[in-house]
Image 1 (cartoon, helix red, strand yellow):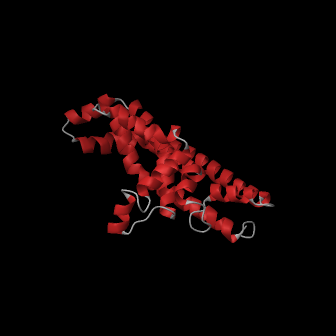
Image 2: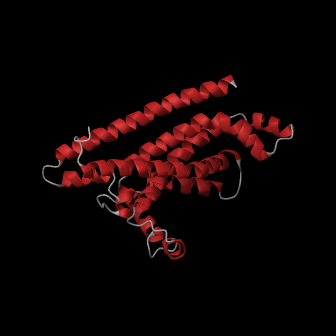
Length: 232
């Protein structure tokens, strides 16, 4: 199996998995918070927040990548601050690929979690509140267990989207082998070179297997969580 892919191709696969995992895990707390706010709270600017969350879905990915470059590049207003005070650089680094993937995948995560929250009867939360439970306690003991399948689904969708992200990533961090070259950008580079079709095909197989495996795993985890929640 190790001889099936070249070292550069294995590095692209490993980097894609790393970027996708980091993008998904880091997005979970904010994704749950934003989904809950959109589903349960009424506040000025709610529709604006909803539009901003879903904006990456309708913007061309290259535009998103360019905006990231302007904002988080070394001379960007956030990027310059992070570089100067914390030594944290996103542009043309794998961390930037994770940031781009997280932003592109975030709407899918939020939507899946929000739909699950909206399906939870608010009367259950209200009943717990009347018994003296605080809002954080109600969320931890009532809401969170009921929305776990939605969180799992959102994480899997985000992971799959991050694995396939190309436009924003290549615009923000370029396509540097061994540093920022993920599976999609490696496939693109191989297809631009004569005789690269075979290697590109191998990476396509890897991408399909990982995506399908993630979907099957999400279905299994979702059913397992749903059974445990129903039995509790």
